[in-house]
Length: 228
Image 1 (tube, rainbow, N blue to C red):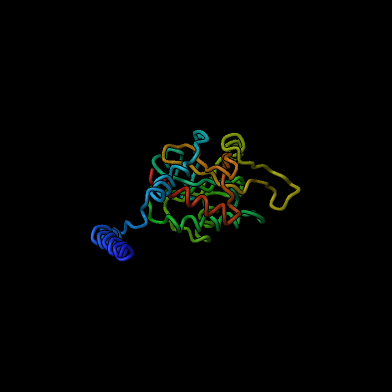
Image 2: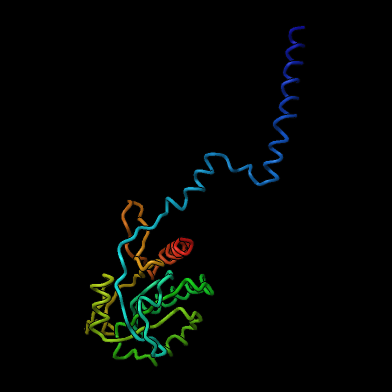
């Protein structure tokens, strides 16, 4: 008799649960909220906070001439997120790979007026505006916000080494006659150099333009900065 009463009581509880709780679960499923528990909400809502990019400092000012003989300065990119590199058109080693990485980045953000790219030659004696224009066309660059810049050699070498702290210099013993960093600088809309942290919590400073992971990382961080 007691056993039968227990079954009746359990059935009653299950019935009440079905009447009250199940409709709420169904409603959450229909609204797409079934996976938004408190713990998951905390992860999704803080993902951007956890990936906050460090501001290293203001990017150095520059004033150079582009492939169309037009003066381009850092003010040209004010209000834009942009990626900057140092290269030269006759580079026999890392530059072709860097150019291809930039093309991947260009394609990802093509058509976004708030994004741009700056490629500065460290061999301005050879890389005249006409040479840079031909190089730009050879690469198949489509973005009007991707400028190839040239100017005074000492000014550019100082801009690279002392301004951005990205190594560049002449070396007659290496193929091509120049050495330079294969890294990309990321600059935000306010003209500040930004970067992410490494696995140990240290700022990476610049992004590897020769590595697929470096390109993927900078694409992710560009997307974050464009939303700021």
